[in-house]
Image (cartoon, rainbow, N blue to C red; front, side):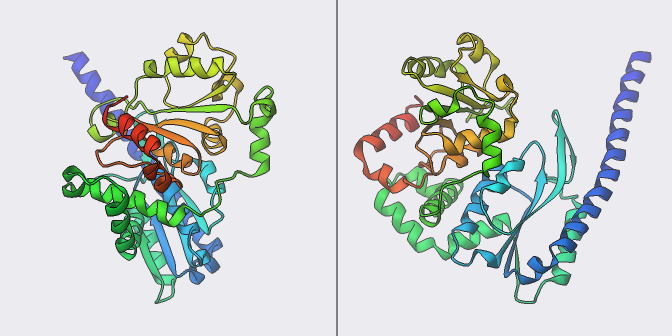
Length: 364
């Protein structure tokens, strides 16, 4: 019938428009990528290790550069990130002081993604071509690693130290030691602690800090009394691993009220619900990006790295709190331990560890 034909025509038109956009995007990505490689030719030739970040979520875009900056010879490394707007944070590049090249390769409009990004069907021909160019210009001894290869390389190199730490400081349970995915996750968490615990804390350039400070009323009076609430709440159940990490905003109301009564400001970041703001009558102590016309991505990084206290669900932005005082809630998968520069101290401190186990295993 007519309505059915109309729907099919609209679907066809949407697909056609997406194909056309994708075609022009690939040309732009290719030209931009080649230009970036030419501009950074000296750094590419000088590098002994080149890490290509083509897969892995936001958390990986923080952890991998942080691991690189823990190296004594960090200039031997070049980190090339194929950057997807909407998934990664543009301002994260200011945190690490390493050799880094961002090649902008994708963006999202709602749930629709455009360009070259991580997916099951590897049809990222531009990224493949740029990788081919890299192999043609690097020195013979230079190694090119994917982000996954880099993780595996570091874990393998430090496996004895990692497993010794796990046996000594972490309660051994079969579910941790027999689940391959969980032990991989656990080893990487311990690796980050062992290599990054002595790194300097994350810092933003003064100009970016001033941008936010000017917009938050009386910031300097409260700079040591900011509680950060990071909430993850992704829609859909296709990715059960991600879905199980979601947090209900209702569970935070009493905690927020308690800290407001103590005279603290509350920074809301992540996927918090507008209902939470309404329940709290948009209290003057609530600080969030839209309220003060602050760039949301910049506000997220600023909040997570400069706060004295964070309550965080499991999610990519949680890695920004590695050098801060943070309580982790609603953690998944089983086998997770606090990702922190104080991991050993947390595990050794009876009260802290009991709190961790209660939050972790009782779902509170």
